[in-house]
Image 1 (cartoon, rainbow, N blue to C red):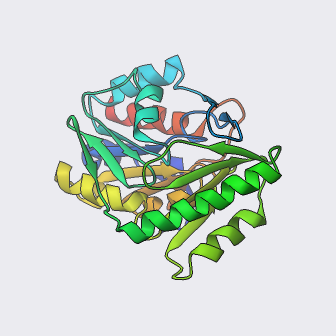
Image 2 (cartoon, helix red, strand yellow; image 1 turned 90 degrees about the vertical axis):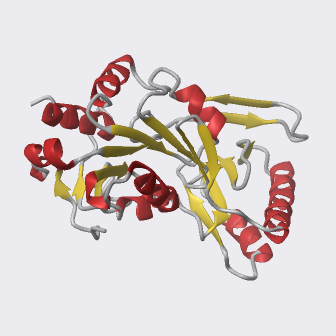
Length: 268
């Protein structure tokens, strides 16, 4: 694995190397290849949920369809698998895999695999945390918007960072086995033994490729382990480092810039 923290510009990544060596590319979604900005509102009693998010642009869809003629395309996200299928429906299914809930699930070759198993105590713990978060939502409905539907992790959307949420997690997690990560739209809460790297190790084995044959890209703390795998490219180097970096550019997402650069290399 290649250590991160270097942040060389993307242009330093040799086009011939890409064409001759790279077999797979992993994209994070929000803020990387689709704009950030999920709207989520849940009623206090949990009986009504409204979610709106972005999808791939038409230009990006065309580029990805062309790019997957040359490499395997993987998407890795904290989102639930069903929602990922909806967001990415225009480029599924050939030579595409989906990693969901921060490495807990992968959909590949028509099969869903759960990559980490948890005992009853874990599910009781996150249930207790969720129940306390619901109480916090009742107290501060203008700050706590609601929960994304997930199987094994919690994602709670908030108006801003809230120390109360971190305190609730600490209260129930005496064993210190959980992460509580700010995502810029809320918090992801789950078991530290599983992250996006967990699923990449599985994917590399499945595809029979080496880490250095995969490019990974992300923009946030939940991408840190993933960007240490293979050739990491950060699209927000102020938040998370990688071997290479794409500086934010007005009107164009880092993942879109990367996809164009990769296609340029592959089509040489």
